[in-house]
Length: 296
Image (cartoon, rainbow, N blue to C red; front, side, top):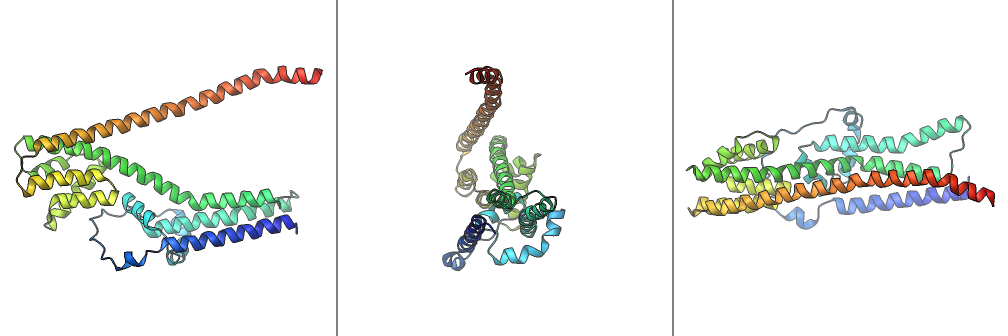
C-alpha cells in the first residue's frame, strides 16, 4: 500500500481517538455537579418522540452513546428547549454516524470494481470530512431549532408583558392578569400558559414558574419580569408603571432584533449580486485575455 495513504490513515485514527477521549472527558458531569442537589425540573409538555427511519435504524446504538457520556449538558438543554426525546436524538446520531462511516467505502468499492482508482489521500480526506459532517448534522440541526425556539419565546414574552400590563390596568390582580395574558394563541404562549397552570396545581407562585421557564430557555428576560411580578405580588406594591416600562423595554429589544435580522438578510442578498457581476466580468474579459495571450 502507498506509504502516504498509510500515514494518512494512521493520523486519522489517532485524531479520532484523541477526539473521543476529549469528548468522554468533558461530556460527563464533574464531581461538584454530581454532589450538588439538582433543582426541581420545570414542567415540560409532552415530549415529541421521533418515529422516523433514522431513529428506528439507530436504536441499537443508543446505549453505547449514552455510556460514552452523550448527550452533553449543552445538548441536553437544547433537547429540553425543543421538547425532543434524548433516545431519538442518540438514535439519529448513530444512524448518521454509520452512514458517514460506511457509505464512502461502499461507493469506493463499487468504483474500484468499475476500474476507477479512488484509493488516494484526497479520497481519504473526503471520507473523513463526509463522516464528520454527518456526525455533527443532528447537533447543528438541534442548535438551529433551539435558537429559533429561544427567539420565539423572547418575542412572545414581550407581547405577554404588554398583555399583563393591560390586564392590570383593567383592575385585575397579579395572578388574574397572568392568566388573562396567557390565554392567547401561539405555541410559545401555550408553553407559558402550561407552566402557569402547573404552578397553580402545585401551589407555587407564578413568578417562580416563570423564572424556572427562563432558566430552561436561558432567557434573562423571564427573570426580570418575574422579579417585577414578585414585587407586586408579595409586597403589594403598585408596579404597573414599572411593568409598563419593562414591557416597553422588551418590545424595544424585539424590534431591534427584528431590525438586525432584516439588515443581515439585506447584506446576504447583496452577495449573489456581487458574484453575478464578477462572473459577468469574467465572461466578458476572458475572450479578450485569451486572444492577447495566444497572439503573443
